[in-house]
Image: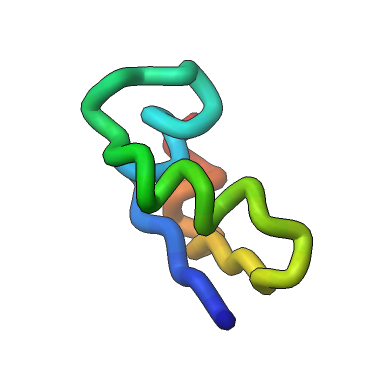
Amino acid sequence: MDILLDTHALVWFLNGDKKLSRIVKELVEDPENMKFVSIASIGRL
């Protein structure tokens, strides 16, 4: 599955924030899924 992470989801995932649902966390951690992040999100980190 292809996953596009917005800025909030990316920051929450990287910080281990509980605002990110368990399901989304599992999807992001699954090595079978391709993750994409907007270059605009990278510029804000």
